Structures are given as structure tokens and as C-alpha cells.
Length: 458
Image (cartoon, rainbow, N blue to C red; front, side, top):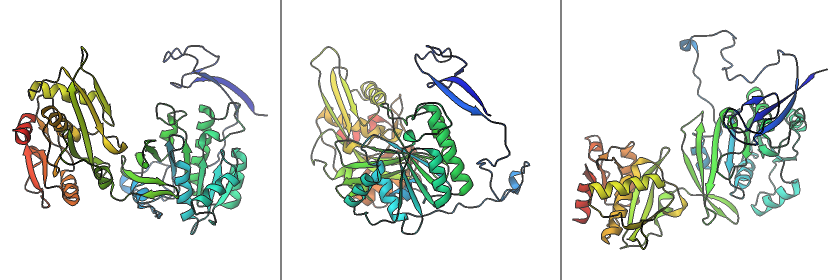
């Protein structure tokens, strides 16, 4: 008979104790210890989900030069946005984690994608949150009621494993990982130990049986995926489905991808009939821009490999209190505070007695350094109450001495601005080279904030 081992683990840092402790001696967190009980079995020779390439065929170490590099075969879906985020399509045998706020559309996205794949492949949709009739009602609303996709409302991992062995599907969706239960563990459903063991079992299924597994995960109030951090380390790809509850647009954001570039984004619009792809995000963020308005500047931001034009708005007004107030939406607060200080010191703008309100419109969040110049110009436009030409856009990072520093992928940014119809783009002078093609747009190189302010506002 297997021996049962009991231990207590801190959910904040992973510290393990033989007895319950109120305060973790490692990280200092209170009331974070959770009981974990599991059967200790003898070591077996059962195959494990090794990531070693099957072509090696040996358990011995081999030279890197002897390993044959094989390009992963990918399955293309009907969603070009999802293909982009995954790096060119779905890699068979991969484990993909999708997290997002409640009601953002994670289950809807998976239902649409899997219904399309079910036309050619065998798909199993496992739901621990909804019954088959609930999923059927949603599918009917989305026009997918006649899909051959297999539904299995279950949360017991033993039954799920048996169902996978019987059906041998090509794709499996787990909705959601926090509702799955590993019966061998004596702990609550959704606890860190349960999530970890279930994920390890799904990884074994994906790697040994070459079944692509999509896992939907809940997020905490801070926005991170609930459960132990090791969950994100174990999977091949981590996607976040993000969006503002006041906007219909949703962004699928890749934060980890073993088979492609990270930080790629795909954009969707939530409609009554489901999620629709947005192939031109730049037009979405700029179509409501008010002409001849002050405090508005357009930036060419890079999300992964995709350049996106976004509008940054600033409102600068005299403060009615003893200290100036700063508010940001979609922008990093500390970065904005730094740029306000640079403008006051290097650009001679008296901002210490001015309230500043800044926003990235459309519900998108911009956080790369290349948006600095657009933020600074939007602030200056509102301060001087002078408009920026609607055909101007900006790219550049600002240093503490007021210099405009070079940015990456400048050619892609210039090409995107020209494609949308902008006539002039301000870029760092150090990015200007003979290989940079103007694409029919005027390139204005600037070396400092003071020079950019002089060119725009005199």
C-alpha cells in the first residue's frame, strides 16, 4: 500500500514545512500555508513527457551539432489573428494557456476556433464550469450548433484521461484548469497543488500522445493567472485575452511562446454573433480622432512584430490645489511623471503648477519606450494650446538629458504610418540612415526634446 505524505506549502513563495505555520519564515506572508497530501509511490520506469526530440533516440548526451533541427509543422486556423499570435499556427503536441478576466470571451474564442478545427480534426471540449446544454445554447447563438466537436462536462482528471484514451482527439480544450480535480491529492479544487498536478498531467498527455491542449485559466484581481507561477513555466505558450469592459475590442496578447515571438498581439471585436477579427487595428484607434484638437498626438507603437498607430491625449490645466495632480489611463504613471520632469527642465515648460491627465485612447495599453516623444508632444500641445497637424506622427525614446534616443524596427513603423496616410513622421536622428526608406512620407529627424518643440510650436 502506498504511503501518504502530508506537508504544508506557502502559496506565495513555495516554502515547504512539515507543520502548519501562520507566518511564512521565508517570505513573511501570513495565512498562506496550504495542506498537501499525496501518495508516495515507488519510482517507476514509465515514460515521462521529456522535451527531448524523438529523432535523437538515445538517453545519452549528444553534441548540439549532431542534433537535427526540424521545423515544427503547424495547423492553420481560420483566424489569422490567432495564427499570428501563436507564431504562424498551432504546433501539434503543444500546451497553450489562455488567461483573462471573467466574461472577456475566452470560452467564446475557444468555441469558435475549435468548431472550425472540428471540420477536419477530432476535437474534445472538456468543461468543468458549464453543462453540455449551456455550451450548446452558446454555440447556437454563435451559429455553431451543428459542429461535430465532442463535448464532455467533467472535472475529474481520471475520467478525462480515460475519455482522451478512448477518443484519441487531435485537440483538447480544458475549461478551466482551476475547476479540474486530481483525485489522488487531498486538497481543495483550485488549490496550487491541484493546479500544478493537473497541468503536469496535461503536459504528459500533450507530449506523449502529440495532442494539442488548450487550457483556459482564471486570473486574480491583480490580473495574473491564478495558481502557482510554475503553471506559466510548464506550458509552451501563455496568452492573455484582454479588453476594457467599456469597449467591444479584445486583444489576444502573447507573453510567452516557445514556438514564436513573444509580445505578439491579435485583435478581435466582440459582437452579438461572436468574436470578429480586426485586421487593421490602426484604423480602429484613429477613426474617432477629433480634427483641429489640441493635446493629441499619434504614435507608431510596436506590439511584437506588428506596428500599431495609437492616439495619445493629454489635458494640462492649472491646478486648483497646492500640488499638481497627475492621472494616466493606458500609460505607465511613473514614465509620464518622468517625462513631465524632463519637459520642465529641458523644455522650459512650467508644469509644476499644472494638473496633467493623459490617456491612450481605444482601451489599448502602451508601455514601450518609443512612445515617449508622442507623450511629450501631446503634453506640450495642451500646454501651449496649439494643435499638432493631423498628418504628423511621432516615434522616439526620451532620455533624462532631453535627448531623443533610437528605437528598434524603425522601417516597419515608417511603413505603417505611410500606409495609413500620414504625411510626416518625427523620428530619432540616430535612426536616420541610407537604408531607411521613406515610403512616400517625410522623415523629420530630431535629436532633442527642445528641437522637437521648436519645430512644432516655434
